[in-house]
Image (cartoon, rainbow, N blue to C red; front, side):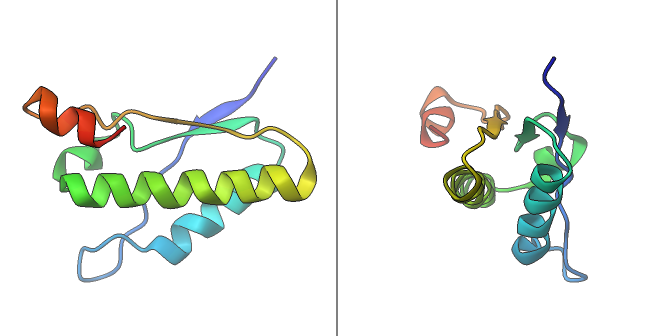
Length: 95
């Protein structure tokens, strides 16, 4: 059985994404034995992020997960959706 969870998105006081803390969350989930995380998904805050913020968060989380996989030789799945775009063109930009 695999264990995956929804990753919360940390923010700074000014409302921007705290990417440093987000990477610490990815590390913590991995170090505590989870098999994967859902990032940039249907969590409530996702509706308040710009397309650029969603893409950047996804890019960083995925890159960190792959670093951990390569370093420790264990798979770590990242599932991202962010399907809150109002056009198919914007949705494709997330891929």
